[in-house]
Image (cartoon, helix red, strand yellow):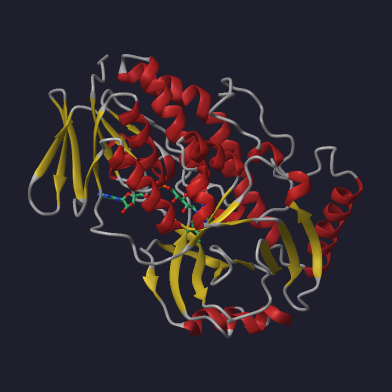
Length: 412
Ligand SMILES: Cc1cc2nc3c(=O)[nH]c(=O)nc-3n(C[C@H](O)[C@H](O)[C@H](O)COP(=O)(O)OP(=O)(O)OC[C@H]3O[C@@H](n4cnc5c(N)ncnc54)[C@H](O)[C@@H]3O)c2cc1C
């Protein structure tokens, strides 16, 4: 057993890493963040942060700034891929938490806000530091850097995303991740399409494919994510610049206004999607993992970023009340495990509903949910309520509580 004292290293300056670094610095710790990138990742991809994540951003004092850089989501509409016809609609103003909306954002902008806040709180962010090896020995965690030097940490929080070195250290025998889906992430500049109203998240579902489109800033550009379930899982690859052919070829039968939208794409990157599942080992004496490093979730309920923010809040809270690092990490696991497993499972099931191969049953299920929701909007029929209502700031989850009211739902 070991105390964490006042000095902590965080690996990764993404949402989880920057949020936990900021919170730890505010509680009086000396925090250093190691980040492989020199600047932003330059991709300009969109991200939806739902009320559960917005509560954490508000508690960080960033609510107004996040509202300034993003657009509030007012509704979700689900459409048929051939005709573009509306199958289901959710008015988020009737169902959501009015104090904490879902925000549509450009991820890099959100990361920039968090980095500025962390630096103002005294966090040291060391960029261009790619960790290529981690070892734990003699009371120290040694981070070997690609430039040849190394960084010694007394305690380390691994927030280094999907291909986490920290997760690898704690779980050395995991098989490599196999990708099950391909996602094309594209942007369409202003005037590129009238199909998407400001504030609306449009979801178009088809056999083994769906696409999501929304305007992440004050209406100028459109963010598009097109996901294809692959027949054969393939070796994972890092996001890469892509041409339009793959995207247009796979979604050629998407009709209505969405077919037109696809033909207006400006730039596109190709991502491999998959999940290693929730890690078996969450911590050692000196290392703990959070965010995607701990529990990568498929993006079908738009929850990876919000879960990362929830983790950051709970981890920093546990470290502030437990002197022993291992005690804090064990408490973190007690309150988080049930939650992250349920959201991961629900996200995978959501993909199954979207991608159901038969058009008629898929559309009927979505329509039935739509009319159920219209008839009884106040009776908990809003399918994401149990996810969005999580309030880790004021009402930390009790261990082993069942937060899921339903796992069969429609979503983004
Ligand atoms: C197509 C798609 C759409 C998505 N849409 C949404 C959405 O709408 N809403 C949502 O909430 N989530 C969404 N997600 C998921 C979300 O992006 C992630 O869950 C979230 O970014 C996880 O945050 P993180 O901080 O744990 O990891 P990351 O954001 O991946 O950050 C990890 C950081 O660690 C750094 N790093 C990694 N390895 C090293 C190393 N060896 N050395 C140094 N630094 C390192 C990386 O450069 C990065 O800065 C989506 C994901 C995809 C693929």
